[in-house]
Image 1 (cartoon, helix red, strand yellow):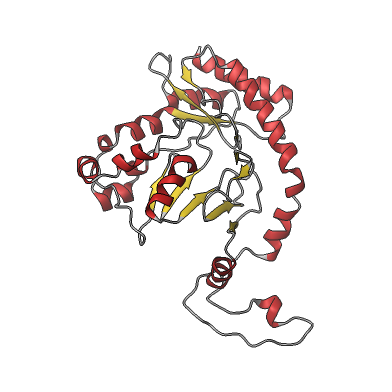
Image 2 (spheres, helix red, strand yellow; image 1 turned 60 degrees about the vertical axis):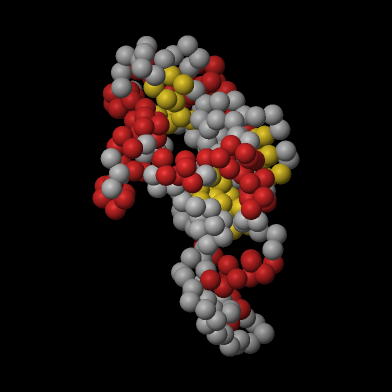
Amino acid sequence: MLVAEHDDPHALRSPAPELLERENSEGDRAARGHRPRVEDDRVAPALHGPFAVLDLARLHGLRLVEDCAHAIETRWNGTPAGLIGDVGCFSFYVTKNVAAAEGGMLLTREPELAARAKTLSLHGLTADAWSRFADQGYRHYQVVEPGFKYNLTDVHAAIALHQLARVEANHARRAAIWARYQAAFAGLPVRRPLEPERGTVRGCHLYTLLVDDAAPRSRDDVLAALAEWKIGAGVHYTALHTHPYYARALGHEPGDFPNALEIGERTFSIPLSPKLTDEDVEDVVAAVCDALS
């Protein structure tokens, strides 16, 4: 099974399937250490996006699971994220573009897969509470396999449903803010997000900048300077292999993955909410320019 992550603003253009195939060769895996073999019973992350990965999955008869947590507005050649592969997984966590405080959504075109996912999400039961206590009378239920407690509550679902009508308008506003940032930061010692490929629509979930060597401050000093301006900023994300658990469990040193380490130490995200006024946006621009000038 392959997992494709959408909407990475700093991602390189999608590589050809033969490049991904070569990257997964025995020699490269041995040279780079802990690279999982692509097999039907394993999950292999594919951070290049779904494009060439889709061809690779078809070549090997693999399932493609799309990580759409940040990409509810994303499109590829007119196809929405979540409908490109076999399964699409969306998040409604409080920081997402549709926020229901917690929970998410799974999309698939396969009715049998959808039915099994629904059963597994609620303890492996054959009927949920609505079905068991409906007006038609009580319905017996059974546990058909070990399941989980992964169901989206009705309250959270109601919160999410009422946000769907605002998705396009919110996306348009974030895209306008994104364009203003791209123009404002062109001359700064930073790397800005790449422009989207032709035929794609970016979700505009996070606007991240990568601090260059020529910058007068480190990333963390920039964060401190923005805090003095009362501008909230974030880090998305530090390299996973530097977190204590993964370093301890897998035995990695920080330098084992130098590209991930560098990106994790140099990137920061700035406000991109559709609730930002034009004045708010200009305050962010002024603060970032001051911190990096």
